[in-house]
Image 1 (cartoon, helix red, strand yellow):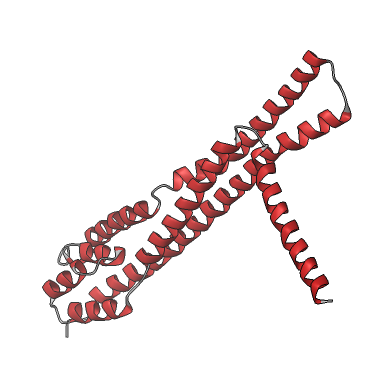
Image 2 (image 1 turned 90 degrees about the vertical axis):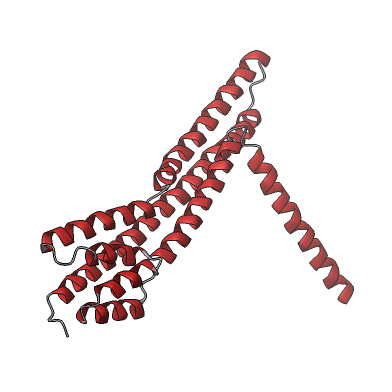
Length: 224
């Protein structure tokens, strides 16, 4: 009984391994177009992970830093507030520093300086996003090109050999349509990553606006 179970487990594992190898072999039957599609997949994953980690770290808001900064401003100690911003490597600190160094000027000048710095910080977050959007558009097109080239090859072989059977056409088509499926999958990954990262950037922009408004309200409070 135990031997039978072990044999069944072994056969199941062997079948699973064979199936995984078959999937890889099947993928490589998509033609030469599969290789640039796989390259695009690796690039898309790299950009998604890199941007996610960068934005996650940059959008971190240290509320202790904000409280300390507000206390220094209310005490009129602008030099300490500016130094605190310089020692904090966060986009929000650089934005607030621009406002602190312009305290004493008209409010519109302070808002303008902080808005310009906010746009610079957001543009840093959007770095490489254009490539991710490009991958989302190019990958499906490459997949369709691979399928079309495969169909052309099938009919060329039929025309030169005169061998026309359903099996030849079916086998050729299912292999060539692998490139279309792969291109669509990579395009979907790029599309989801592109819009997901943009949602993170939009959320960060909302936090920036709220913090800037709170900073401007602090300037209107009387000095302690």
